[in-house]
View (cartoon, one colour):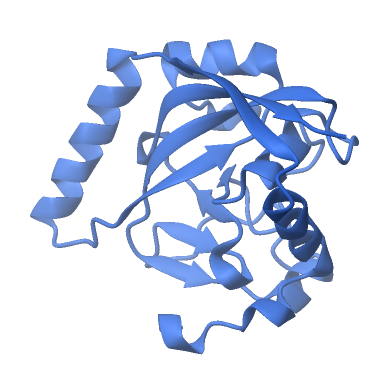
Length: 189
């Protein structure tokens, strides 16, 4: 679906609208940024980008957030995302497919750093990642709510799945996602 046909913001599920309000009210702040560099994920990302360029795939990159438990962040920085561990934090394989979930909304990522806690505790952390999208497809929120996309594989001909409004991005190749920093965030109550 072309960008201009994406659903207007009002049609995005209420959960996302609440997070947006929470952010706009200045309730989430950055305590510190911990930049870590690891050559293994960086080399994998650069190699995939080069492959895609050779095959004339779209090279759109975005800065997105990934929420997970702090102890998982160490492993992700050491060796990149491990697709075999999908669902180990959330307990499911994903509403928009079995992949790595990212978002442009830090507050949404925070909600995944402490599963079942919304809003998250007063201090939390999220990963800031550089993401290579490739060919994307927008999946239906209505179908997702009925479980149609739950745990599904990547749709043929695409590299990433998007939720309506691009609120959630799902990547299916760990080389698409380069974690570059841990953002330590505070939540004003």
